[in-house]
Image (cartoon, rainbow, N blue to C red):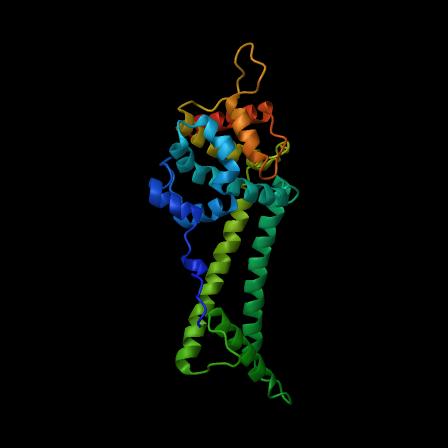
Length: 277
């Protein structure tokens, strides 16, 4: 008796797939997100994990489920950004370090061009009496590098006339590019804007701003209210939006989201919109 073959995992429908079939997919919030991205995010954050947080602010279960992919996407991006921004924390460049980097690029381009030209010059010198192989060997090395410059990597040299001419032209083009790069790097040094590169006072969690922005879009669609961190006069409990953000962020990696932090993030987003507008 043959055993029944289980269905392929690749063909098995995910919770996100089933939601799309039954409810028509995620609610339209404006931005375009690939369905594969939604699917991965929803696999990481199933509806059951956020239902108790999202459902109380939704008009019904259908609306809550159609907003769930956006919540899952926001949380997946937040988790990624927290990790990534932590890596940047001590590696951003100061204005002087940026200038040094540009100067190294300039000198590196100049040096590479000079070294290539030097090798070519050595290969084309007159033969040395008693050392008949020197020029030929240097010429082979020079041509071998030119072949690589042309993007034709190989363990041996293609020395057909057509190939050598092609390599020569690509080499000339590279020298032109290196000269342009060195000139641009030198000019860029004078255009470094310290006001853009000065290190701001580090925030405890810079990724929170993006989370607040994304969840703010979900909140506005879900509740019909603008995201706010302002307390109701005389109220003792935290604003609903703050509770919403704090509860969701705690599921990922930050259980210390306060009203002040959300308020600061909202204020920053508002300032940025004004500057862009």
